[in-house]
Image (cartoon, helix red, strand yellow):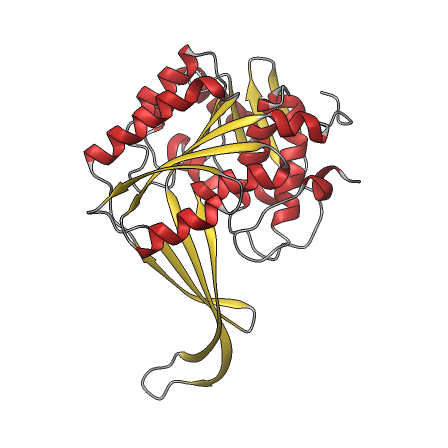
Length: 314
């Protein structure tokens, strides 16, 4: 691993990442809190400002383009106002957007109520896309696959990746590296991917608790082997990251900085990793940069991104 190796703007600009997953619209209502409700022991928020951002898997694609890469996004949304707003935000952010519309689907919305710079409440609006919309998504994926350098599946467990085993198979047969941000306890659906990037809670859900670093190493490598993965990248929050592959184990420490908000940090990590892999980097060379990108974004509020200048400028 060469810690000084970094891509040029031109390298990233030619890198094409195909992102597939659960798209969401992130809404923020900001307000002031000056009293407690007489109806219940809860704060009364006087909303003074509203904001909408690209969320979930769509935010992964946004992170890739903010870093300087090209990103295409394939997903399913409802035929509703949030779906149209999300599409407009994505198209305005230079993401090549390929959305299937499902008239029975309610586009996933996460509404966060903010008062005194703190999240007071989150409301989720969601349901699951139908079979026809997912079939259309798979066809779009098949059509776009040849023109991209890396494939990224961002699973938020909202039903948008019901066909992920078949899409991984297509991508690997086409010789494309496949990166997966997993969810749930059934990791068999991600078999044959290049790398998966679980966090602590996600990994424990699959392999159980570990009692030492040696125990973790054994369980992680056993999981990697059983799923026929090239690598497993374990994101460890304040402890950095550990990569388990056929060469063994590689660990990088977290970048020291104040943590303000961890929302979307995993999106930034895997988007950075995929962008660099698409630009020709190995996972081992891309990993320190992805670690640093995660460290930068947790210092920002809400779903956020990292620019090329922030990550590589110094």
